[in-house]
Image (cartoon, rainbow, N blue to C red; front, side, top):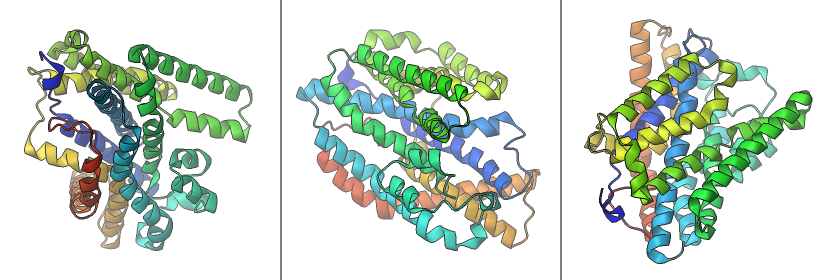
Length: 384
């Protein structure tokens, strides 16, 4: 690692896949529970927490990659072409996001074998306001106000990502000291969340405060800013070398597992900043430590990483459809080894198939257009 121009971020596609897999695992158990089947969702903390941590990992990874590429563009071009940045993000995110939104509101409610009884006890949530919030890229606000739309509840995190993309090129473009800026953003957002939580505790019956509390709990731009700190560390290469060791990597992995099992559930979400730092250390080691014990740079993981957005967006639909199919044919869904093997292998393999078909026949058309607006071209890493 002698020159920033030659830095190769290996293994990031594999990390994308494992983050998506973590979300899928949690949601398989969640959907089993919501459909009234025996489930490990509430019985084992790893199954309960894994999905949320997978999303936080995505946030940190996005912050790391996007910040690095923007810093690199600013270094090479002297500025940042915000318009091209927005167009790249639109072409990558919007087609699949709006397809899933259309399916969730207008198509999937008619496939009754996929119905989830858990949602029947709530008032109708397929409202015009809910739809409008999805259409203006505020699914996280919709999630804070309404119960999740069956099969597309994962879209809330796409809203957070889009809000991050909206402000981040301006942050990097106008910042004269990016580390200072990132620290201010982290401190400011933490302060706002503490204030909102304090006010809510004083008046927990206030419906508007509850919505605000739910919204800011999902608005984890701090995790992306922590990823941005990692990008700054790579630019200032003498700093990130200190965390590139297998000892630090193994400690971080063990710390994540320990936090999952030994942190009280009531404050689990409150320590996402600690998880974010640990995830950043893992990302730096896997992608930049040539001696890392984790080696996930191969054709399989590159393929799975390339379709990870589809894995994330389609998995709730596929899991519900597959479990619904098993119910239709009379298969016993429970926590036995055979049942778990069938459910997990079937749901994951089908999700991979659907994501690949989507990537190959739908998303790739937009990705070809996206490359026309690429400013910094490199085969070593991608902002996808």
